[in-house]
Length: 107
Image (cartoon, rainbow, N blue to C red; front, side, top):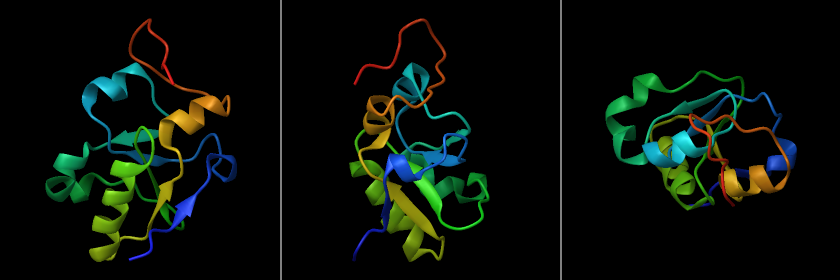
């Protein structure tokens, strides 16, 4: 199965995205407007997915877990797209990040 993807450059800074990373990663730094559903919880939390016009962007740290999530979602009829390079690429592109603590997100 081919996993559809979008680059961070093509994703608006205010886009609503699904973040499938673990809680510690989420707290360290995340895309603004992200909805947090760790990959392992995704099957039980499909009702928590954000609504979007067009494909739902899915992000993780570097793109591997989000690709798994996109494959899972596509198989269930959810239109989703993998954010290439993940949060690392987002931060490297100089895009804004939110965090819960004083430590900045490290790429």
